[in-house]
Image (cartoon, rainbow, N blue to C red; front, side):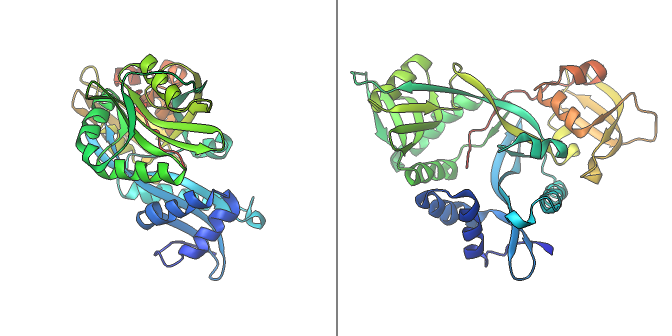
Length: 355
């Protein structure tokens, strides 16, 4: 068996495996393979005749601090039932992680079906989604939601980018992103909606529907109470499930996991409260470039690392380093490695894509 990247000549085989395992609604699956598949990468576990496993790497442009990078969202990790527990997924994950490292991508990310699959590979949670459920109610509301139209593009982009610019890490929202979000919503019997009051945009959200349930994502409003009221009035008598977006209320659900792929690239985005240097040993059993003893030189402009032969003040895994710098469950790591406290954590993460 060999691991090879699809050259886009295996669409039918990949589509069949995708549907055999994930059983997505046909309309969404067709959208995914018409819009996402042509621009993504698919690593295949291939025996020359049969597709035995696959990993999809979906490309996004990410803003990290004041820099932009290409990153890949890992989805559709799958192996044939008869090939499970034979190390196929491990081999595929190790391959794609090292390939992303070679390209200098700071991290990759995913939404785990089961975190236990990914924690051994040093994936760590970095973001909760606030999930809430409301019931739609009929009633009057100032203004009205309208389907997104092409003429709305620049105004919608300005509105959404104002909403997300306070985050440390987020998906870059540009024209392609908006067009894709609209097509994805339509594939789920929904749409991308724009809400105006007194001629100004005060809310944008994408939704999908399944029977009597409406699912909201990419939801941003200038006022949370008014935003919820507007959504409720738009879908009377429906159960409405809202996740991510601008909401602060609701149940916090661990959702997004990161895995650092290029320690050097990620560190360039890490700024410090004051100029400082320290030596740490970082262990990474998967990506050799991240494994070693490094001198960290940090300042308000970023952090440079280079190999060091001097004695380190401590040793930690790439996963624990991630917990510290992404500020999610990292307090114990910071207690053991106080030198990392000078680094300003990238703890405000906004990622709402879900497949």
